[in-house]
Image (cartoon, rainbow, N blue to C red; front, side, top):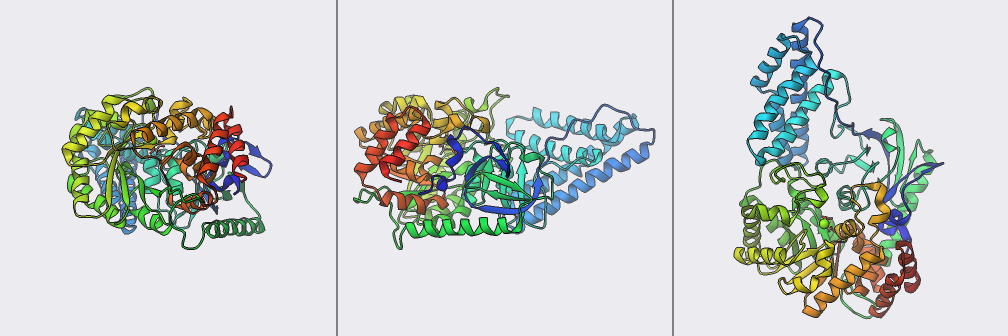
Length: 579
Ligand code: PEP
Ligand code: MG
């Protein structure tokens, strides 16, 4: 099995480097992408406090023209989103277009220009007034403030002649290049138009990487210098090796595509015809489940032979929403997912808002200096129990008419009090199988206390690595410290799995580590009872498990844990498993 097959191969290499033949980052979603570069522009600067040249009429025309162009552009993007089946995105974009056309805003801009203020500055100040009004209306409209800022930035960019912020629009497929991509941007992407992602920031477990894997688009993160690639120039992106080659020769593109096709073919062949269930060679069952972000991921999961869903990241449904989804709307989405796995289990995670996944309708009360350590996940829901109750109620109703087994888990659980709170909220809502994610070291270390409160654990190795290595998963430069092979992380997994086993409760793994075929064997050896991953990883993991006995997996786990570095652990496991 090639080391890079999971797309995590670069995570232990100590970071990206610039190579002679191009740029190098961390390959996080395998495959080859080739096409013209479209760069997401950086932030639009605040226009200087300048006066116009005395021609107020011309300044007003410029401001009105910019606002009108922004409104038209947003409307047409809304239409595009709707025809791609994303009606909610159109609602957001239409609401933004209405902000740009607001007559009160236009009057305020005109009045400022009459006072001698330049058009860009007048637009900026008029938006600042509305921003304050919205901000004072409470936290539920915080998402509208972000929408308003986006409209302002678009209008100011037009007036200053700067590139438009946000996702580029293009009629032809392109390689999306950015310093970093917000999950909300990624959620709005039309995968049929983006042939690859390349970002300067973001680690292998950042949500951009996770989304890229889920939609099967080749991606490279932590790639220094990529944001300087000229827009329109062509690049070849290898999402396995992490190499990004500007202006490649035609034969290099053909060769790279042929090599990737060969790799895919070999992987499918290795997973064996008709082999659907995850198990070791000696028959120890390890159900292989899919990580999904919504109904649009079901097809790929079913096609890859997922035995159910091990992680439904419900917050992914609402990344571009500023208003709170109602219970009925949620129920309908959950039912679609449950019905897709009539004989399987579906593990749904309640909203994990905060840090790099801000939800417009669910945000902390004030600025946080360090959002990854702030109010996110269950911490946020404890402050909004009514939202949690609404989501749990929708889940219970959705499950009532289906045959799938519904299990519901909470993210960012830290202690016994958290676990108890969540289990009780589930019982009150009629959800029978409450579980918790183990992604905070405190929860792993005291998993024995928590096991009595809930029905199952699911280890989130992405956050568990982030918090064990004290290295923000968004920061690509720290990828070395987010490596899931870190022996300290393997120790925590072993402690949690052991506590679950003693309590007679299942303990799955749903972090990205489960999708690495070699690590999947090690996790099985550490006591993981199921593995959940992005759909494209399922055949490779199934094939790797089918070649090892449970005893061999245990030996590999012991060898990895006795190493003193991530690289050592990886090498020891490869050697023990003979791959
Ligand atoms: C994790 O932290 O490992 C996990 C699965 O959750 P997320 O990646 O959504 O934070
Ligand atoms: Mg997590």
